[in-house]
Length: 127
Image (tube, rainbow, N blue to C red):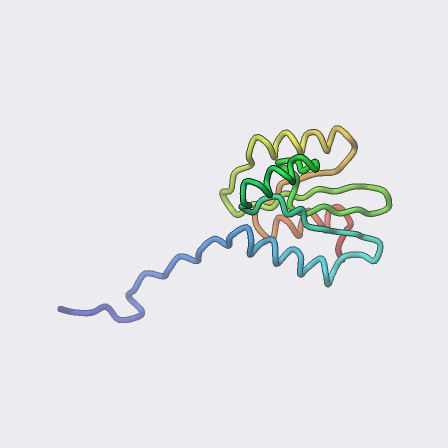
């Protein structure tokens, strides 16, 4: 049986980064590049929790669909939902993003790291 040489092998597809990988990269960029008056935080709503904890958080006002990253600069609130390439926005996320926008926040869904950084730069939040 004849084996292919390395040059004849088809290239391996580069896997699409997970949302967690994108999220960590965005957080690292914000830590280094955010303007001095930008406050940013992660909204940790997406992790699986025991039913008792989930019920407690709902009773305390946790809202489904909050953007992954929230940012505040000079009184303006920004919400950035992070998705991997080809990711889908849930109905809860769509509704929450619409409500935030109706209340004056600037919101967006970013598909991948480059899109997220482009949004942050366009909003004037990073160098």
